[in-house]
Length: 170
Length: 111
Image: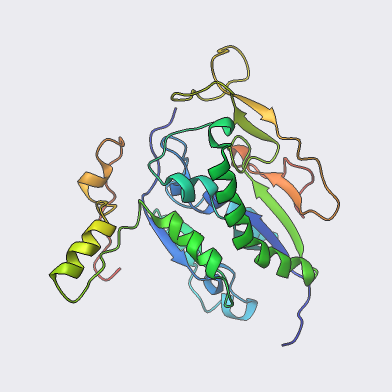
């Protein structure tokens, strides 16, 4: 098969294409987050949806949870399985020289790029994380995802605005 | 705090429609636009190739929204299918009860 020119590929958090992956009261759209899709397509990116670890693990009727609640051996094994499922596709893109970017979702316990919701002793219905006051609410913590050589560039779609990550989209 | 905005509809979309080749783009409908207008979320099927692990993961993500009826050849098969798919269909009142959401309108005839 003829090797075509390198392409631009956006690895997209599942819920940006499927708001049914969100927890109750977490969705802002019924289905697609169209501004994200339009922004990526208008810049020539192919879309590659990533699996949603939480949706595949706990289903659509799950309630909110913080990072520590999901940080169990079973959930880590589940995430490894998801990574093994999607890694070959990503590897194909990297081997052919495609430009690959990652659009995650800040605040998510699993797919947050820079921040994730966190509270070690939380066990009930979480409140929405706040930047001031309400010391009982989960908070956002830095995930320490500094750039690694060879890794895709990362951005975030928090608030469904683009280009707030480690570099602007081209 | 917003109410539950989810559409409770997921569409399995092949890669050829998610990322149509340039030549085919003009000939194909804007599938994502149609799905967005209808309140569907997308589960992106992989391109042709050996992706059995990824397909299994995608199937896991359908649970709870998609409740396929498995049709068998007899009553025993039908009962077994019932046990395997105990959730109510996603658009039924039973499925949306307690979520603070109303069921979306049914698909248009032929849609």
